[in-house]
Length: 179
Image (cartoon, rainbow, N blue to C red; front, side, top):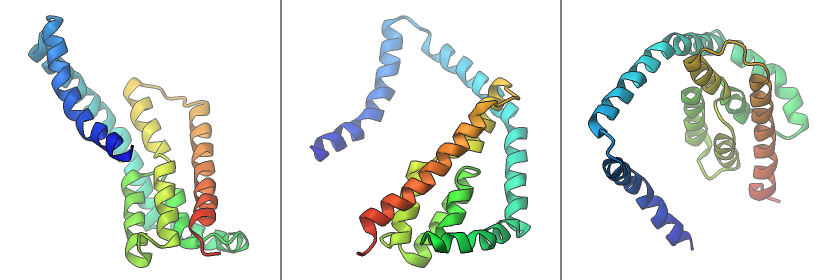
């Protein structure tokens, strides 16, 4: 069964890449002109997003490089000790909703220090797979269409990130912790 799913997964993307021009040709869509028009719109969207991305990256960098991030971790550590949560995985849980590249850096650091098959490595891997870069997603998608008031999207996104971090810790401890 797994090999069948793996075969489908291997051929899905090439199939889509080949199928789209064939279907467009059958429907008499001008393929090249449509592609060029879409590329023009994509370029405009990318240019529109650059200020939002730069602002977010500057804020994340200032937060990390100023030492405020480390100070926050040290302040929370006594609470983490009560719940037997390793402090090394907390920066990933916090930064994951802010920055994808920053969280990958922390994940790589965890792998190098503890190994990917350690409890912390498995916990961090679960956390990466279970959560998303909420602030990045809101910045890019809301910024691209000009939405300035995120309303409940930010609250729900951050709440789901928190739930995924807690669930990752609980599940990793249940499945991978030595008993």
